Image 1: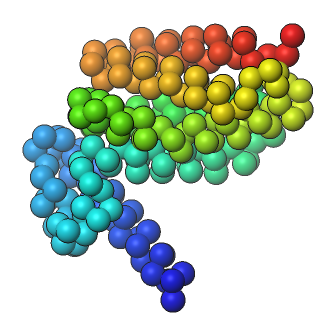
Image 2: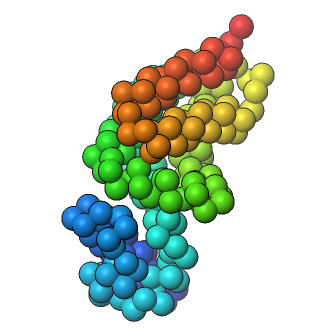
Length: 193
């Protein structure tokens, strides 16, 4: 019974997220109310808040979806850790680029609240990156001098900083460049000596 309940809960959460993304893409972030999202997803407002405490918390769900999509795509490649990290970076930018205006607004909203939402939104990506780093450490492609979690946190934090810059300025070229430079800088410290 609980397996079915969990599946239904996941389906409801996905339906709410899909409705939110569709509505916000159509109308813009500010023009969409929680009531609109709940109506489109065919759930009660309370159900929305059960899954998402705020509109900004949709960012975490979006990033979880992106991280899972990237993890699924990585399984199809036989690459080393450095190449996988390059691919993760490119895929994150690609996913974010497809929903650019909407996500810039959600990021800005999450950042103005207390920053906790923005940090929490990156946890799934940090776990994915840490797994790739661990894999690289096990094959001696990356140094074990630093923990995989520390390398992942540093990398994802740098990406988050460039995302905030992108949200504030709309300059996607600068964000891409900053993401690339962050990966280069952090990997130089993580490579075996």
